[in-house]
Image (cartoon, rainbow, N blue to C red; front, side):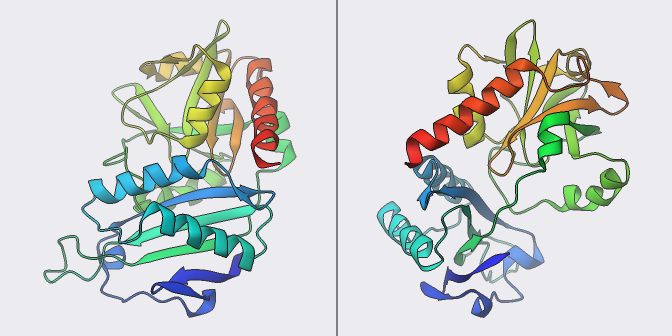
Length: 274
């Protein structure tokens, strides 16, 4: 659910009044960037990391971000206060803009929205979830673009098959899930891909907590033979994977290293937000 106030047209306005031109590249070409972070105890979680990624995405996509980090921090702070966003999500979006040739990047429009946030059910954390393998790599994967057309299109199918999401791979090598980073655990070693992925902020902090994480290619066969597997994202934190396609992962239950990392991440949140 969207909260009452957002940032658009250079000011804080009622969310219901936010608009975008129908010929913006964000609509006619699916060209734009976004980022999403959580608030805990009215404090943006890992804000500087998200600002780093958002500004880098802006530069890489040739979209001008007219606001400094200081201005962005001030806008976000005001939105947290105005929306009383004790625990929720904030979405920064920069559209592709109105292009003279309807194709080249132009001066985009910045939106910042505040939202309610619902985590996956406790059952999913306790029992794990299923992923469906899909041969695909996201284009310009290191940029958090607004182009999720394939995942949205596939989502109805994976829901019917009782899956949480898809697991992208190409030539038998895994990259990521559609909205999450991917990890396996084998013989006590945590392993995660480092190529053709979005460098997730939650991923980064989980790696710091785990220590000695191997960053290397992971084959689909390795994932099927792993002792444990999990995905990580802002909106999931860490979600155990207990099945890929028709293959049970490990014991078919969330593993001890997975659950320990989840608990330690929750403790980290408390430390930095109170």
